[in-house]
Image (cartoon, rainbow, N blue to C red):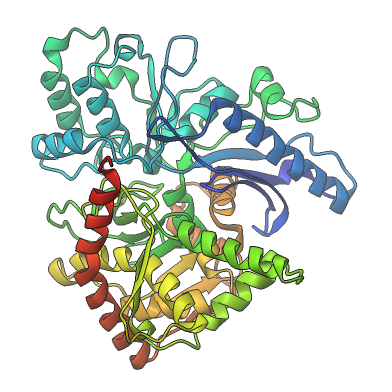
Length: 527
């Protein structure tokens, strides 16, 4: 018999899937549910509609309920704790009634360059374009009409958490992508909040920044309970009961760190899917770099983050093209089998892709200085155009921008990385993603057996920590000693030929960046 009070649920709004995971006290996944969705480009803004968000959540939760019933013969009516996670950053301001004042502006938008640059100079701290404070200040610079009506400044995770619990709060990892946080106070930087208020003092808004930011909470804190209205919104069928305790809502970066046991200093992980980002927990301060963000672990330690807007979206499009060809040729291929076959082909390619190069930029990419993307494939006239080389090029180009950012961290700042943990769809095919990431960064890459559960599993672990930690037990100790002590993982180290091959590929990639810049410029010109 399954005791639902001794379980926890993590629900995460990812870029391409909303997924929920149910775990027990041994921290093993018991059941899961999911809902596929995709962002939309509407009037130049990457967004998900409010209907997408709510119906997607409900469908995901219904899928989890169905899985629980199929496996255990019981209706999912409660749980010991629950938590919401979502893609970080972005902009979703609401009014006093909790209604959105704008469309949800996701992390993918590169429309806040002016604001990000000005705030970075004001704070002496790198403010990326996708951070919520950059979106807010850009809206101010643009004199948008909704600004006087702002009551709460939300991320997606914070918005959903408040809808379900009535509490306006963010985990400190999520909060660190809204506004810089202070490790000592475990709250937003007071000096920067004051500097922002002085900056906009003459504009006459009826709010101050501290009044519209969500409460900042560390891992382990209690962040409210599921209300009756929240239960009805989550589960319109009426089976799931109110009163469930909630952990602080976190961003996908924080849940990824929890899911890969990358909370302690000098640990790191790479999440690779629609976007990709590397997280390295710091043991010393570093300088200000526009390519490197400083965020926080769910328990408030500083983390260097290299975030790329683009990873597998263009690759997925090419796989879709191959699937269409196979169908036209009369072959019925399972999509998962097709991905596995194509990924494995990449290991048969030349280490440097044989002269093939491309750009997977579906949207802009701050690290290389692009506000727009143009997916682009090119080759030298004498290049070896084979399926193996093409697939290797697709995978290496998905990692190239990440490597450019990591080089600043490891070379300029001398931040040591002993090993990286990988998670996300890029690592679903055994060995391939690990080996190619290892070739890019030159260190071993490990993947845990639970890596396929990803962020929602990490969110469930944060719920478990809130429920079952002993006294002042730290999050790092809880994960090390009670979750991952006997965890199974595989570790891959690239061969020297793969490492030198990636180096040659990246040299060509860097030289070809002006080609992408020209593609953006030319395709913007009117006939």
